[in-house]
Length: 458
Image 1: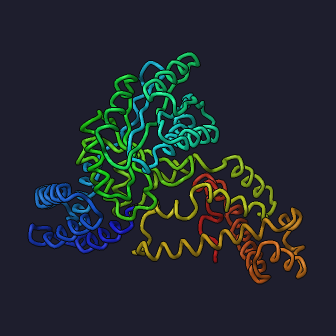
Image 2: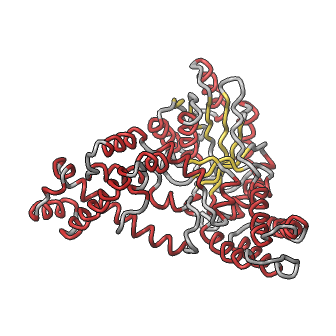
Image 3: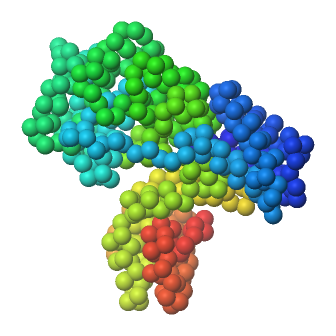
């Protein structure tokens, strides 16, 4: 997300960071570039105008002119205004109601409402430690009811059955009654989507809303529709008291116009970002972290949170102890490291949150990422094709064994040889870390994310 905008803004702001003094004259060109970058990112025109005016006002005021490094202060102003534009801080779900707290999902067809209901159920269960029930009030699409049932089974929450003969209001009310009897904390009500905003749909969802009085009414919208996402959210908000927005398909949106327009146009906070198809791919929206990512400063806090949720601490500790005892870093340990990284969304999930590396543009990073991802998959396939004895002691892998492993993994004999060589290099690195007492520190810091504290030499 934001790849195009990050590229443009990073280049533009690089020109201004070295300025000894900033005036209205010498930031004029920079502001013009910022304006163009935002328009190209499909940010709504009124939002762009307001943003640029605010940045200009602050940049030529005392805030920047009294700074020792005016250029850097200007970047700081842009970052602060980006945060303000998107909502200043993360707004959590208001679940402090008498149980069950009801969450109503609204949105157009194809925006990902049902998938988001499943992701949100998992988020509440795992991160908020809530018991959750999901129910579909979509009586127009049998597939939607079945899809929600499947998702509920996958994430381990209660599913309340419904069918096409029932009325949406009756379904929602029955689910809430059942949740009360079962002492369930949160009920997520999925509603029908339409191809466009229409009166009939609004009347139906208003009736459901009036009957169940949800504590949260979340509008789910496809980020790839850009500023149209913000306009659709506004149309819903005019008819329904929304409490927040969930942007879906964010991983497919290189522009970011929706994220930058929604809050300004609707006045409602973005509460979550949907970052993929998997049930864990839902992140709370933090404007400050997103502003950092837009300006190429990375998002280390989110990276740490991701590591805490996905990395296996037990395996990391086990490896640390093993190495301290002088036992080698074998190919099973190597495979564990690759799998842990995959759990964090692979290189794409990591690079998106790391600060820009030495002026490397996102296109170059993307190419490097694609090559490395393929290499990592190949490495895993090679290790999987080995016997347990070969993984524990690669020295026993003879020429005939290499041929068998290559055949089993769909690779070439030289690929197997290359992996064994890379593993030996990594073993040496691990020994150095252990000898210097740095292994435990490295494992705590990276959670075993990248062996040796860096990328394997490919």
